[in-house]
Length: 153
Image (cartoon, rainbow, N blue to C red; front, side, top):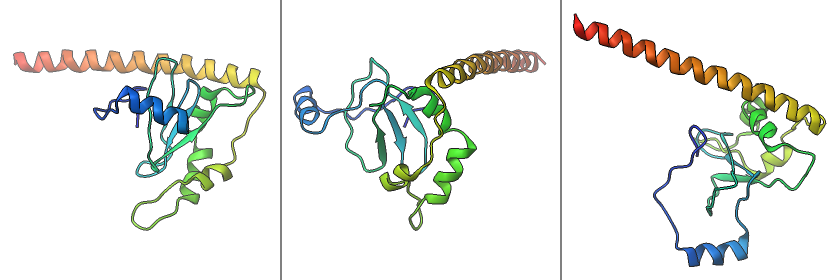
């Protein structure tokens, strides 16, 4: 799945095959959410406008954004909350490796306040994320300074 919001994958299909499969099965569009169903359960990737990819994998659940009353970014943040994570853990089935299935996803309770509140919460979360990212960058700078000082000793 995606780390830091980007998908990195060296496996590609031809443009011709992409068109054929897209016509037959559809493909993820901006605002859709891809959720891992095997391994690290419930990790989300929010499909961006510039993304163009096709997948056919039972390990990924595709949440299509058909509803104009839902902010996809809000749902993505919800999947990182204890409220959703606990539901996923409780519903995960399987022997050695737990799975989060389409049936489990359909039974996951997702609280949806008004679109206005969703957008407000997303804006607040993104503002906080900017602060977190800036602090991570400061920590990296300080770690480098410490390393430089230690290398001089």
